[in-house]
Image (cartoon, rainbow, N blue to C red; front, side):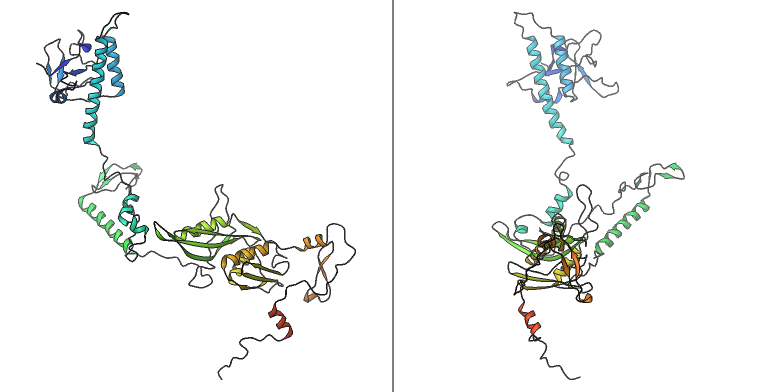
Length: 479
């Protein structure tokens, strides 16, 4: 009894006795056993042939079956695609005429059933065979970042909870460094990749190095990699800030360009404070982050400040710098060098007193106030800070006081009078600095018996001559 029998729907014709032409593909159906499953021997020796003309020189052994000259082969060709399935179904419908209406004919439906069974069996077999040649494996599905992540142990409970802090930290290495596209162990020379494309006006041909030359090239590459590993990373000396051991006063340069291409080349960024802050969490324990307070300005009255927080210090610098440029204040300056009037303010527990000074006086203030004033463009001012020296409160109070100044023109419009200024170099001669834009008021401003100004006890003692310096009674050694 034969193991497989040809389907009657694909019988041979006189023109094509072998039944192997591309127009009429042959489908061999294995004889079903119990449970409608083909036997194991039939799985190994059955063939599903799509509409492909086999070459004459192909080693295909064929053996004739007793009926009708049908052929089948021991070799297995798997071509079960959607197009082949559609072609098989079309052939079945063309070779099996439909029955007339009102009659019952199961030949057509049995042919379709055979096509579907054979197609599903061949497709499952092709999938199982295709897995043998898959180039995708566990060793090729992980990216370089994922492999480094596992090698450096950057994740996991130990890294999150801060375990192993005192161990030597491993660093990533760029294994692609020094690699040249086209270079390999075989030593082939590919024009346009590892050798020039043109030489003497002609395109070079593909060549190969000798064994000695290839060994020399590999030795040079190993030597260069060893030198890169031994070479220390060059550190660029940053600009010194307020002192050599702190980040305060260090310049970060202009903010990064905006999304629409706008640039801030005329702005400068200065660090005011860098602090390490910690947050205790139930899952990760003590979580460390960096908080940075920076101020930006263009030296023409526009300035602002912002805070940046991140796990890494460089990320916090970048966040604070790019955020500060979105929170700018415009500070009015008198003649471009000082404030319009004296300012005394209290912000929380920080007390700041600022005084207007003539040109050439300079900045005699807290070092953070000096940095902010230079970013704003103020060149002459005296400021005294008392109380809390919290850097954030100091910065917020300073910007609040400078941004809410009352200019001479605003004062003249409010009072309806001329605003005059007395200078030491001009003597008793007043200088008109602003005039009201509306009607001029006839009655002068009433003078109160007690001037409306906040007195500093230290200034009162200095005026009365009773202020004593702490260094006045110091005994110096004889020369």
